[in-house]
Amino acid sequence: MAGRLTRHYLIDMREKTINQCLEKKMRWKQGADILGMHPKSFSRLKRKYLQYGKVILEGRKPGPRKGHAWNKTAEEIEEKVTIIGLNHPELGPEPLAQELEKEHIYLHPTTIWRILKQNKIRYTSEYKQWKPEPKLYALDEPGMEVQMDGCYPYGRARKLVSFDAVDDCSRFGFGRYYEHEDADSAIDFITRVVERAPFRVQKVRVDNRYGKRFRGYCEKELGLEVIENDPYEATQNGKVERYHGTMKKLFFFRSCLIP
Image (tube, rainbow, N blue to C red):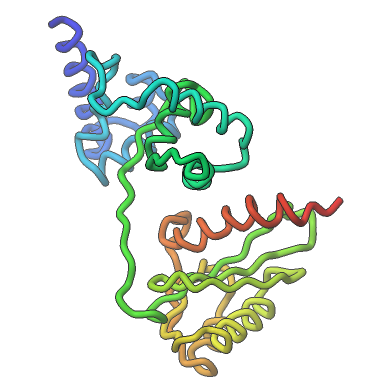
């Protein structure tokens, strides 16, 4: 009972401290010192508190759960999953499920992920930061919005930029390499996207770093509406960001290792 009261007391103290700082009755640095936090960590806690409410202050329930899962996989199958996971570290849960099907073992990728995690083969960490559940969505018509972005697969020291575009509805993807990430490269790339896309592109979502010339070209020459992401909000361009990660892992790092 004492532990529960202490937990609720800490939650109330955090909420009270944040509210006093929001009401300007206390300085943010002073509030961070009271909670024993770094000022930047306290600032992130405040931002998440304003976005999600008191639930962000509660955290997840600690401690192990009692009992046994009713859907626990047989030990011999778990051992097989563990062996394949060790032999194929480059494969994720879905490719591993396909490998198991060759041996007539049919498991859901989530089950494979759980087995690998419980046996500490992968996905282990001492600390798990609370993250909101992703809100999955897709537009109803191809071409309504195309997400466009550029990345440096081998770092900014190497003059190789991968411009990529992904349609929000159909997941149509297109990529091309350039030496510079500037307005000229962006204009050339979006022109090729419009030419190659099997549908009419209506809007393009980009970061706010390609300038007014890129916006003017899209609006006047291509008839596209340009949507710029808010600063430091990569989640607004989430589909093309995920495409970047997949290309780096399965294409650049595996097939194009340039010395």
